[in-house]
Amino acid sequence: MQFLKNFYRVDEVAEILSVSRRTIYRMIRDGRLEGVKFGFNRVNPVRVTKQAIKKLIGLSRVQKDE
Image 1 (cartoon, rainbow, N blue to C red):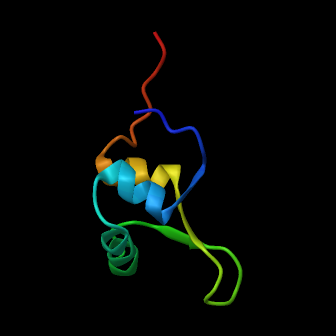
Image 2: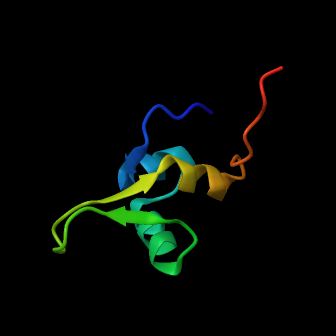
């Protein structure tokens, strides 16, 4: 799987992982998935980094070019 962006919206992550948005928010709250909140109030969106998604699905190893 190729990731084209560094930060993903919750709905995009849900689609990638084939789960609901609610499950993604739950995973962020439980610490299974790292979320980044932009700003200081509750209205600002949460984003998930490409590295956090890769870590969750076990693709965090960098493969060397041959």
